[in-house]
Length: 103
Picture 1 (tube, rainbow, N blue to C red):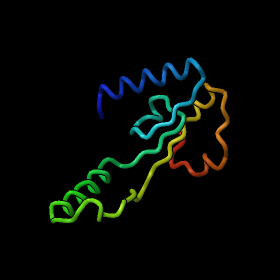
Picture 2: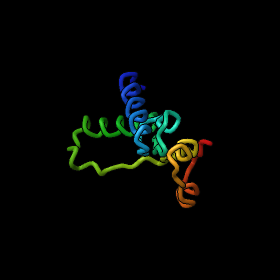
Picture 3: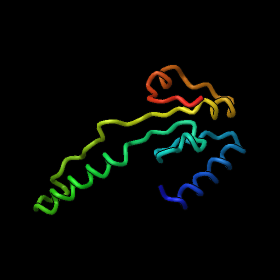
Picture 4: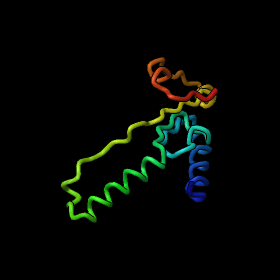
């Protein structure tokens, strides 16, 4: 995790909270740091995918010939404590889709 990025994110969450603005992020750990929603991909899987792309390119394949890949799993994390602080109701379909709910 990038410490500078983390500090910047915490400032964003703090400032947004002052104005009752929800924060949604894809940064790992964002929901634990105050985002109402976070969509996270396993960093190891991202690294594996990047390595596979690099190997194909090094083997002579043009990047434009490599199809776009999507991660096998994306975690949706909902922070209900933040939702309550912001006086927001998280819709049931979002809660149902969540892989983790922070209370």
